[in-house]
Length: 122
Image (cartoon, rainbow, N blue to C red; front, side):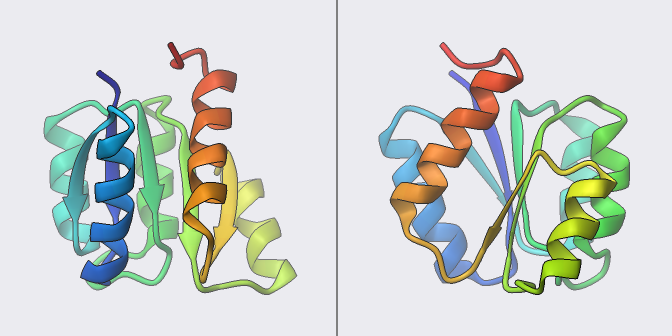
């Protein structure tokens, strides 16, 4: 079972993602701020990280720097929708970038695509 870390400070969005990905057979873990996520990343390995940018404690850009050295793919899921934000996130090493609000079907398709590209899909 593939493990996905959801790093999102808005609990309603985190729960929406968790419920839908869990229903598809993924094992999901949730962190609600950057510090909690950093601790979880240090103690565990994940197959994918869904990462908000605007987080309390440590922002998503800083967390991306930490995660990419582990080789874990990252999809930014964020309200920062300006072109320069997307370019910055992708150039920093994110594997994909999805702007809120989003349709859950699109998120699932992007998760599946990134896992395929990273060789982690079944």
